[in-house]
Length: 468
Image 1 (cartoon, rainbow, N blue to C red):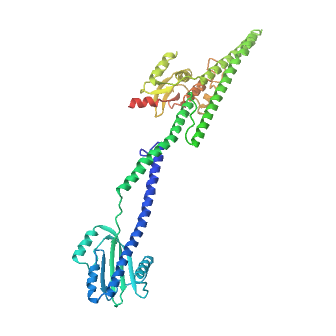
Image 2: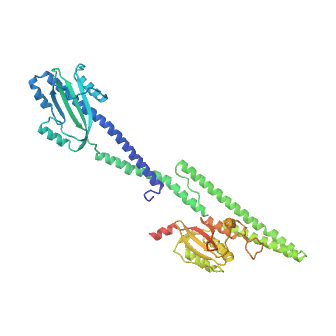
């Protein structure tokens, strides 16, 4: 996806920031819940304290002062009134109501005989003024409670000693959740600057060696000479780097030893073959002498091909950046048998030119020898340059598509040197190409003939310079 970051470092930093934001959100949600409980308890106990004081005043003051006491006690948020019947018509208590009642009784000297009724619930939506407020009080309440709010409504009915009931109605809005500027700056500094900076620094120590490991592994896969990687970073990364260095050293020694053995074997076979050639000349029967001479010459050519194969996989030519069309034009000039060359876009690749020239020559010569013609074209994808070599020959069976790359395998089964080589051309070509990070594959064309698809790595640095 286009929005998904491709680099591991960016993905890890985004993951850390996302986890931090989630943790902050969960903490805020828990804080809001605890805050609502605390606000609910504080406001309820504040109203209960005022109600207890009014109860004492009403029971100790003369009856003609009761209206004045109630008017003085009224506020935009709390309303007091007296009536013969309670405004709360139920006596069922839940935990919150029980706490409110217990608090009120403790403020009234623990009187358990007094009947107290409590109604406590939340009110959502637009808050209406409390009933029985004066015009001025109602206007003040309206200004304070504008908009959609969540409030706590507490209604109390307290039996007085005079036989009447004191009814108390309260509505307290929860304070709006506020984000202080200091808190926002603190969170932004922690998540946006400090956390990202520290994560970037620490992840660079991890991603840097991994990137170097990827580059060296790709270069080593193309057969380039590479130095051991420095062992740095966390313990696991150090162990990975050390294992890669050991693998690189073992593979290099293995390839060098096998190539040396192959070359030495081909070289040492020359001496006995020369001695056999001398002894054959002493054979009197001419037919026998000619047959033995032909066999020795074939063996000699196979030894020479083996040595050529060994040289092909042991060359240490340094890679260079070249333009495809110039390379193929020069190759066509150097070959005795010309081939057709179809133009294409200007593309650069990074190759070892002598090795690639030898591989392409082998493929093109096969097309000219067995297909009668050779047409060469090229294209590219995101990572490779693709060179296509096509002929108009009979093609090869599907079952032999991979066998033809085996050393000394020949489709033509006769032993005549006039009808084919020694079966090393394609094997050498594939060995050279794979050593440079490429490959060669064969397919039969629908219109007849064979198509060889040769891939070699393109030069990304040159492509980037051209785009910029």
